[in-house]
Image (cartoon, rainbow, N blue to C red):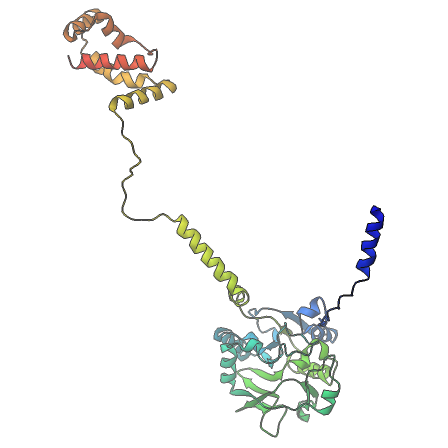
Length: 383
């Protein structure tokens, strides 16, 4: 009977209505490993195969004259100090290739979302503004309409892109650009001219070096290096600016550790500071007027003497209680001790045996005995 009930429950539970499956949106993550972290890994390996001395880094180092070309996103210049350091390096002969949009390492090139489009989270990049102002370069957004083949082929790597071509004297390379950033320069070169006066790539000399600014980092990123003439364009840049030295790809951020901590986990930081303040408020002593301790209970002198005697008895140091009194009396002894005991007994009214006990008993028998001896010594001193 037991098994019949169990089988019946299993049968009826299986005949119930099936739960409607929830649709799960899968987001392709693209590359894994180093390529997922470093968006310029393909370009780095390509130049390495061409025999160039190339490396990548997440932070700015004190680059010397051996480093000839640095490719980095504009969002790296978050502070004016970093902008000054970069321009000082260019002025000494370095060549800087900087992108306004799409150079951040956290940008996902495998989705339809706008992640990484434009400056990262629209932050305030005072270093980037400082560098562009020093170079006489300005940028603004202009409306861009995607071509028909863009809308028909949306899917993998299908963000809106624009195919432009550099001037023939600078290679005549066909490059893809995203976004709607247009560049203008006061005194410099426009690699990709535009009818509206908005170029996608400009360049200018600065000191002994040169700066090239691109509207977007798409030509250098991993998924797009094999498209259009991106590889040829990268080879052209490395041959012109990085032939005699090292080439560096910067893909990190100039933000300090504490700045990054505040940016990503400010709520945790505030909660930790509140807990720290509360803990210090509980632990730090208060410096104020001293209040009277009403818990102190006073006791008669006799009880305090008994407590002292008991303590000295436990520590076997009872002699310290009687020695000062005996020493004061022995100073009066200038002759035979026997006659001295008789004189003290006669002057104090005590028996001679009590006088001998007070001056010679050592150690006392118990705390009560030491109290009696001390009382007799007090009588002898007051005689």
